[in-house]
Image (spheres, rainbow, N blue to C red):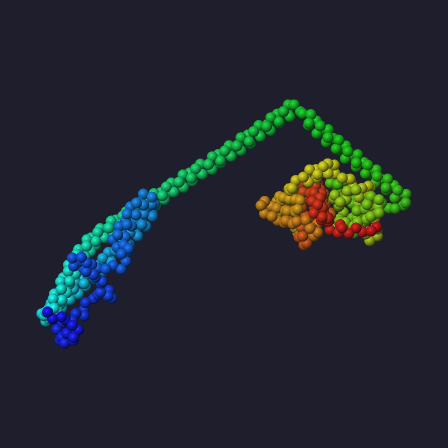
Length: 494
């Protein structure tokens, strides 16, 4: 038998073996590695025997999904099914690629077998035996490839079945998620409606309770007032008798005070008459805090008060210190808390006369005012009802009620919920009684919160006005602020 050598290959005609067709498409850039196993079986060599096939991976993932089904939420289950569906799609794509590669291998093996058959007829001896052995190997490889194709078809069917199952499971999971979401939304809406109904019921119950309580309180107050009225009509109490006696005593005291002042003025006039001094004017009014003093002519020769220049002063009780009262240039002056314990003096100057009048003694304090102020000091904030008569020098047109808040740190003027002015105690703040203005001067005060901004406020009574002044000055003194009227800090020497 003749052996085929390399020289024989060189002497063969080049057209003896037909070339492989160029239209064959290979699945990879290299030919698969094969080895001959027992009984001449062709075995494909694997690069990494530890790597699992795609079928095994999908099977393991499916088993894990089925095991975790009971402990996964609906949303997680849907996500897992979607991932499995994507893996199945990927596996189907790989199976399609493998089918194409298998087809390419069949074409390649057929062309190789044809080439070997053509070569078999051209060689003899040992070379022919080698060619026949090669043809046998190619046929065995074709059989192995057919078996692989059968397995691939079966795997493809299983993958398709698994993909359909995962797709149906994913759709069922999505439907279940939508149903659970709709159910949860319905439960939330029902809960909101129930809460709203409960709130409305509570509000209605509260309104009914308040209205009922208010009606009961008003009815009770009316019954109490009616009982008091009936009792007072049929059985006068000792309290009413004491009140009548107290009013009578106050009237007698006021009358005695007027008589005392009149006698003092007559005594002063007599002394001046002994000195041959003409008596043109006199001061009328109680010399106590809460009243007012007015200049009255007492002679036909006295010039009209409106045509005279007037200036009021406060003088110490010993006459050693005399202070000008800035702005007090009217015929009426209402003493304020600064004037208590001091003598008031007024100069009346006309073209031909210069008359000086003074009170018979120091201004007396108002009865019970000190105790009232001490009670107010304990409060953090005290409210007084006032009416704004002037604002920055112009008359205020409306007479609506305002509230003056006198606090420990500041003074605030409000109308309802609107704040008209609010200022903390400072050296620029001024507060004093109104210096002139008629019979209502004893109930009004002057307040300048800051420079260029001031008010004239009228109180309900003289007691409220003087209490507000004393209380504000007390709180300002605690803040190291001397709260007084214009130029009250600069006394004039006699």
